[in-house]
Amino acid sequence: MAKIVFWSPEEGASGCTHVAIAVSSLMGITHKTSSLLIDANSNSKKIASSYTLYDDLVNANSFNDSNLGMNAIMRLIKSNKLSPDIIQNYSKPVLKGRLDILYSAVANTTTEARENLLSMPLISKNADEVYDLVFIDLPKTTTDDSAIRVLTQADVIVCVVPQEIEKLNNILKKIDGIAEIKDKTKIFVLGNYEAGSKYNVFNVKLKYKLPDPLYVLPHNYMFADACNDGNVLDFLYKNINALPKDYNGEFIIRATEIVEEIVKKLKIKE
Image (cartoon, rainbow, N blue to C red; front, side, top):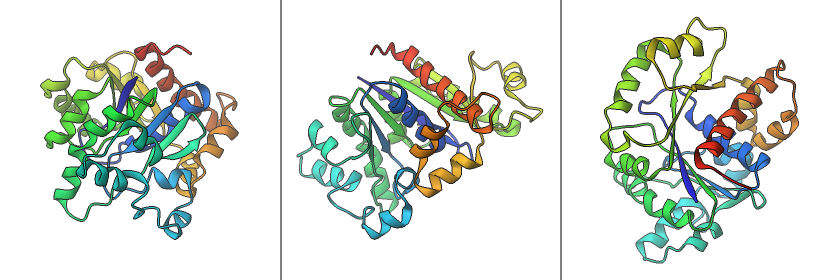
């Protein structure tokens, strides 16, 4: 039905992957949609190990398994055997009927990594036929035309930017300078957000005339620990009804606001 790309135009600690994990997981918990979260970053283990303990993944040889994740998908593309249902077969269910994840590919060279990214539009197009929503965690770059192709195909681009004034101006110029996505629906999110900073959401929005609304995902060490421990879903379920003034409650509320903005932009009906 729709493709949502999480992206930052510049490498650094923007918290883009954490936004992707929180939003896609909460979408699965709170809405009756079938979703796929694709890790488009070659050699990345961050998404996979947020839902399963890293050591368990290593012991199961999950990262090198030719029957799971992007490794399998790339093999099928090369043999011209890719089809929509096959993508579902090679993805890992983490919320039954609501959220699957597609592990990242192993790339031994930059050429292989580029090939993986060049295949992403084809993969997401096929996935779009069997899932209501396809979430893509895209590498942080504007210099690779393969990444631009993925952005061009997106229905919604979640632009995750840092709460750093010296970087923000340059990042916004980069986003504005990409003609291919000028008219795309975008949602801006301040990642790893610190509410106590002088450069809070209100001051940043005022200074840079960012689109309204401007969303935030607070830095939350307990969520980060949950991602490292492979139990992010337990964290979200445990705190889903936490009070707004609670440390984790604030995190859930802000992430849910992004979820609901995506629902609104895409006019999702259940």
